[in-house]
Length: 599
Image (cartoon, rainbow, N blue to C red):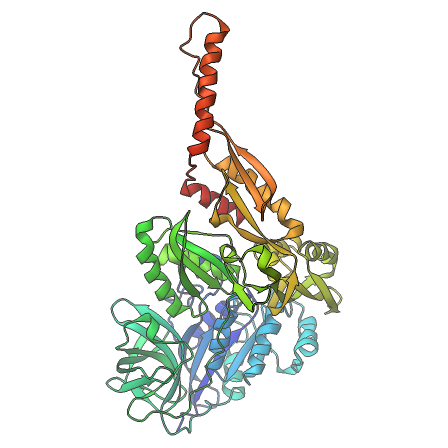
């Protein structure tokens, strides 16, 4: 039977509403970490997380709390990311809990991601405890927060706990609420061992370390375990819990959250969402796992040095284990050599993965322009999915191209309504309806093409609304659109690294900008070179690369002008011949500069 004094909960909120600061205070209050070793953002273990002030990975930790009823409770806390690109991390941590603390910033109120995360928790059947954080701020508006809590999330206002992670206000109230309101661990009466793998990481000395939540049964070192989806068996080497560093224990029982070190050495043998059971007495039913995640943004990643290809392959394998939302497959490009086509949940996700490859695995990489998955209907054939513009079939065989759209909820202050509507129109979007949240804020529900918001939409939203705008989105349906493949030709040769699928109305502007940039970046050549943007056989933009000219008349002293003319004509003939047989080699740093400025 389960230990009735165990509680599993996580903290969910919008970006920057104080999740990590609050978890720091909880660790301090329960003496899990002494003041001497305590640091700010203690659970954020990555340099990248501390630098950007965001949580990228969920972080489990176990705390002992002596409650007011005289009993000591074992609390398992998971701190989760707030950004929409990491919502898969949030859904995985919710599956390992029975309750969730929903944080609301007292100054900013309910934001887009607060609503999305709250609905994720309701869908999993969790007990949601609302916490209004940062009440010590001069701009805090508690009445508004409680009204939004009732109107938008339909949670009674009296359930809310007032707190401040920074000032340490209301910490004990939160812990008491977790003890009294969050139910005891579920599904504990199942006769055999069932543990859910909700995360894992690769350790070069110990192999694959799985993070698991045990629902029923116990697991200890020396036993043979089995992964239910693949039937893979291996011996358990060590089990332990997070305090927040790994701490070895004798066994993990029902309701416990901890780690399992086994014989599994390869990163592709374990799947997130799998159920661990005993090999000699396996469970018959798997735990409900996670729905397969679908990437929304694709781009090519190539090593700068071709010798680093294997290194990049290993890095992606290990990152895939730690972040199951990443998907990759090999591809090659004439200009950039061998690399990988990678799928991400969003642009921040893409940026973070690229940065982690550079820092954690020491591989210098270049990424191609991000693109999405298009559906192409050909004459008399089925639909095909294209995530790389190079693979688009011949335009004559295409009946229509459909692009993915997103349903976006954009929360903004009233005064920025006009500017935001202009951006939505510029990005070919439509506003379906608007809701007034309170006297200062509105929520726009829009449909936008995913391709249009890839690069700068979120940044522009933030800069126009001075940081007060927020956006949450989910993938909508596919819609047919007037899309074309734009190619860039250098000296009449197409360069596949710069191929892109664009809307016909924007092709000319984008093509001209790209040609100008390339003409600037490609070093001067011995003969005149045209950089052109083309759709099918039609050239829509053109620019010229600067031409080098050797002064052939420098040695020519005196005499008639015909002597100079003769030398110049000879040079002209040579250049003409060179142009016919000459090849332009574009240096790799030209690709990097263009792709950087594009991104």
